[in-house]
Amino acid sequence: MGKWEFTGGQKWEDDRFVPVSHHQIDIPGEEDKVIELSQDDLLVPGLIDFHCHPWAPGALADFSIADQFLASVGTAAYIDGGSFGYNGWEAGDRFWRATSVAGVRSLLNVRPEGFTVIPNPNPSRAEDISLDRIVETVKRSGGRILGIKLALGSALSKDDDEKLLELGRNAADKTGGILAVHITKTYHSLEEIASYLKPKDVLIHPFHGERGSALREDGTYSNAMFTMKDAGITMDVSAGKSHFSWRVAKAAFSQGFRPDTISTDQIRLSWHGQSFRDLPHILSAFAAGLGMPLEDVFRAVITKPRQYLKIDLDYAENLVVLKKKEGKTEFLDSYGEAVAGDYEYLPVIVIRNGKVLVC
Image (tube, rainbow, N blue to C red):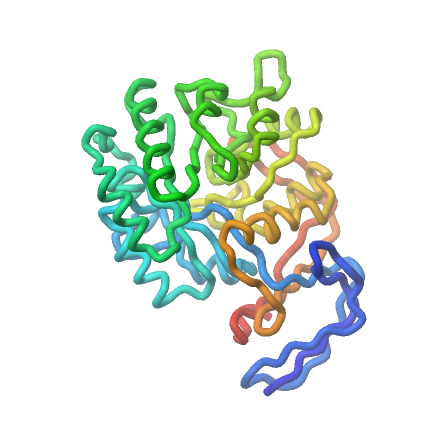
């Protein structure tokens, strides 16, 4: 049993960072080690990705990402953002439970095929989707499905999306779960979407720059977003490959709007690509690029997500060291626009379930 002792740096404890005088973790099969951290290095029990797409049999290879990639950057738990509907979720969940390094919970896609067909020339219409099967799948999940996911803008018309919204709301109410709504390219106004949401529901992609964006013609951020947030709707960044605009985010921040959760919407094609390559990079963008207070950033990747997953992250077997790398860093959005910061956090040590993944 190796004793790894850490000195220096700052440790996440009781929802804030405190100076580290001494921290120890025991690791089977390792030799004793003393690790000195700089005062700006961060020590956390793990990050939570509120929205990503881990691979499982039946998922598209280019769309989903292996769980091990997510764990390698310090992700200790995550929510699958609707990769599967009722036609494939149970098989996917069995695979995740058997193989995942990180803790997994799910949103069930309102469409039975989920995102297993992309592009999807013939997406399931609301009238062809079984509400009974959605409810049955959620109830059999033992709490591993947190709610219903629907992607507005992927249907053929506003009328089709309207029916999906009604179906998703009905399914969430019948199962007692949340409704999580993707708004990129929506046909609906934000006010119309708000009428379907309840406290603890989730609005996904608040900073996208496509049809239905919260950025108004006068360059300001929509008041409807503030109204939803004040009503208890969780605002989830879910940056992804195609869902984040600095123009929108800067307008929002200039008016005092802040997201509740910072997540990746990670897929295989976005992993270490040109824009937001992983969760540490995205949280760095909000801290260094937008000036979001550091502890607020980590509440958005630890505290708030943990309330939904209802899991404990402790230091007994889990630890991540994020090293502050000084120097100009460009953070690219989905449209090629860059915001510069003067530092970035990099995961240099990752210990998960008592096993060293990165060192």
